[in-house]
Image (cartoon, rainbow over all chains, first blue to last red; front, side, top):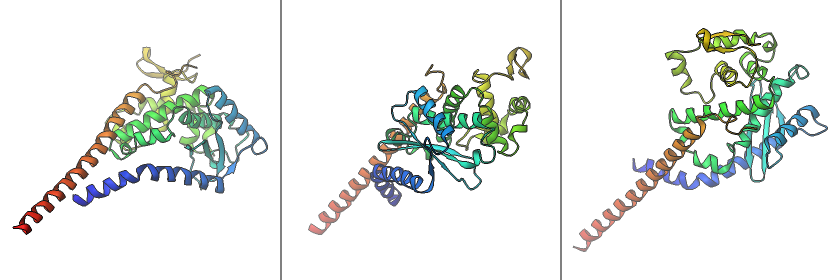
Length: 236
Length: 53
């Protein structure tokens, strides 16, 4: 026990410099291994990022990078001293770049939401540094953050529900997914085990994210109709 | 742009609880460390007292 307290104390002393070092090293690694987008390098996505950053009123123009995720569909936002940046895995749009700009716009908007809400700031990460290790609470907070950023994505890309469908079905077949049917699946996704299965996750289940956005009115189309007892119907 | 609408309604309350939990954990570590030092001090004083006798 004595050793545990000693280790925890020294870890606490090292928390700030350690976190600063980790953030700086992350950016250095990204700069060295990912492709930085510019008006010449993937100009469409770069323009989307600039447009969204202006709409969100971001104080700093974020950088945006593209990198291989080795098969993982992911994107993330991060900050260091003086810089904000977004990294997108190329798996999110390889082979289908021309066809899924809305999906990609949703994902870029989601990541810019993390920047706007301060989730990547040093003070924010310090203020929740230990909570990520607290069972349940860390997960609840993380999922609430993701819901907030989904709202940003949907606000900036109103046709971007395909971004979530892409995460659920993968880039090869997501265009063939019936979104209305998927919402029906989300409607039926309730009960004890779904709640328990969700508890340790840092991100909400994708079908639930989709449904939450429809219910909040960010996307038009199929949505829960309370008047019909929760049956999913198409809105006009 | 409606900022309130763009944030999940549970995020702020959860963040506040998380900050409190974070502070509590830090406080426990600091208090634990101080107690550790105090007990070390006590032990040292006791050894010193015994030795001086």
